[in-house]
Amino acid sequence: MKETGYTVLTVLIAVEIWVRTFWSFPRARVRVGFVLIVALLGTAVAVSMLPTDLHPYDLLMGVLIPRQNAGTLALCAALVSAAFFYRVPLHPFHRALLIGFAACLTVQTPLLSLVGLQSGSVSTVNWSGALNAAASVAAAGWWAWAACRPTRVPSPIVSRMQPWAGSW
Image (cartoon, rainbow, N blue to C red; front, side):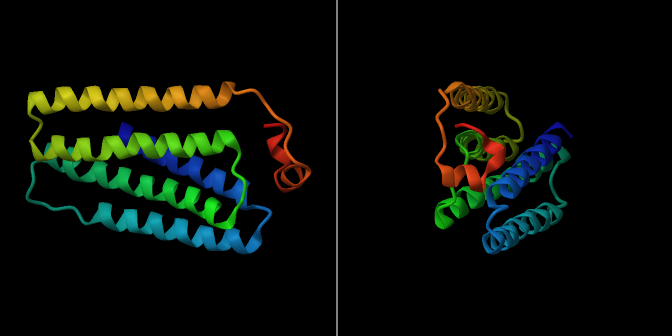
């Protein structure tokens, strides 16, 4: 339940960043929203099509959570790619959030799949847990660095496009 809660919160953060970033661009907002909806529906379909012949632990750790994480990773990557494609300036902290989530999920997803495929062997759980913890600490460090960076005055165009952003 905890991992599903984290996934839902991460998706909500990505949706908020999408709304805040693309609000001034109606066509881009609709197109990027369509891409995000496709990513969310693809994740829902992948999660709903679970095999039934696995042990519940293997099913949860090796299939369900990695599929949720892969969908969330696709959502974050689609949002960063869309901002790059449309040349929309992402707020530096929003960019750090999305890249941190993507990096952490890139490490966590295959590790959890491996734990599920190994049926939770002790050695696999131990070293994958250590790698997952290191990825989480690295993402938190990245976010702390992004939050503590000196602020800079945005250009007048960026201030008009994103009035909520203030100085960055």
